[in-house]
Length: 280
Image (cartoon, rainbow, N blue to C red; front, top):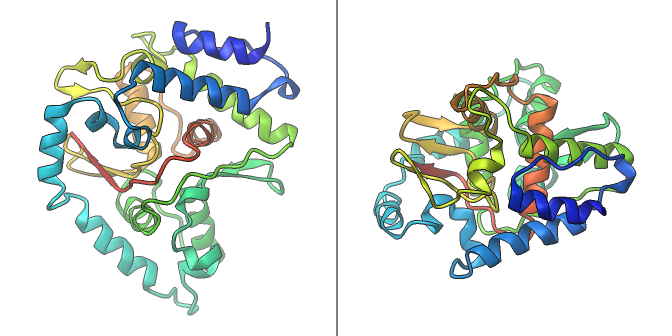
């Protein structure tokens, strides 16, 4: 059976896609199956609204969000992130010197596959690489300074459309495939996959939380969560999900976490950046 068909079945059956060689991977076919699944299941949700996660699924929650966003709880992170971004390192250089367009309005291009290292580079990894190149210690990948920096950079890209490239490179295709497989693989004592909640059950409630759709789920990151009382990065969100299903989380920005972000970001191509976001 062709792999594109396998993916379509996986979206409906929530089974992990069968392993296959990198040269059989077809991201374009996967993208179409993924997009068709969500748009057909939720025909009344405007495509670009999927980036608003649970607020696109629940009208009452959306009303609360609109009111809260008048005084966004992530504003402190934006202010801190901008100050950090603009402040030169002791050597006189800034974060902007490490990125195209001085780091402004580029969030939609991350993560990307780096042919030199043979790995997926997320914005978080790129920021720590920048720090180390300028003689600074790397930041923690889950919250605080890293979340503030990525919040500011996401804010400068609001409205810009995801444009993730998967080059015709076996290593890039393998990274994409590993991310896809991790997303659909069940784990932990509860035997849940990422897709169990975000493909099978978006819009449903788990206790007081409304589950977000996988389509566009990375667009609002980093996010402020009430349960955290602060900001969190993509790594923090993945670690939390692993823990909630009583699984063993990976290390922040582990290669597999980066591959998952690569997969989900590619699936979000054409959708606008909406981060930083706020969630219950």
